[in-house]
View (cartoon, rainbow, N blue to C red):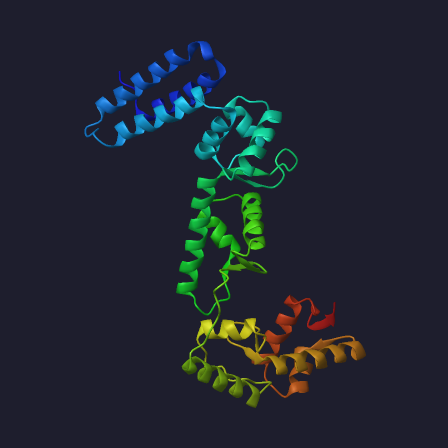
Length: 314
């Protein structure tokens, strides 16, 4: 019965290990593998492209493992299974870890690999082939550019969203992010990432809308209008710039009003120990619609905490 592709791939792994580990049987193992792969090729309805190319690529790789230097073997392993840590490189190349570290250092100095962290010292340090690193960073830059194009008013993309798109583990992503940030290919802003050339820029029409919105908030600072909502992207820009504070989905205060209300509530708590919703309503001559979301937001910001029907300072 001809082998299927899954069986052949399993045999590839076994053969690749055998080529390094047992020089006396290399030729026989290679012949056996090519024969198995050829059977898959022959059993495929339209074999003219996919599996013939597959067999050729496999043979090239196995010849590298068979005849190449230690650096050649490690580079081939990094290209096939990267990013790899020292343990994987050692297992796949059948070289001792000490030799792996020495040869990877040589490859790095030649520009053939990229090492993230201190290999052999840091448990999460890994090695990319230069080709693999270029492919990964290309996808990262492309993902960021697409995000900037889709959301031009946002300062950047959530770093975890980009990590998810790349399919990287958290430790590897953080090391890659640190390297690219240090090289000024990325800009890190808190939990967001952006390309260096990305800047938030509003059109004159947007500026006009924003100006009118803030003016309306300031005209009735303790009971700001909620019937004139601003586009969510523009509102996000104002919040990031510290011009407004959004305490819930429908209540937004001008930053100056929010600060004043927070200061007055804090002073009241220092003097009286607690405050109720009714007392806060009276203090600002406004309705529960605005005061309750404000007090709940102050709880979330760890300014106050709720005790029964009252708030006290944290």
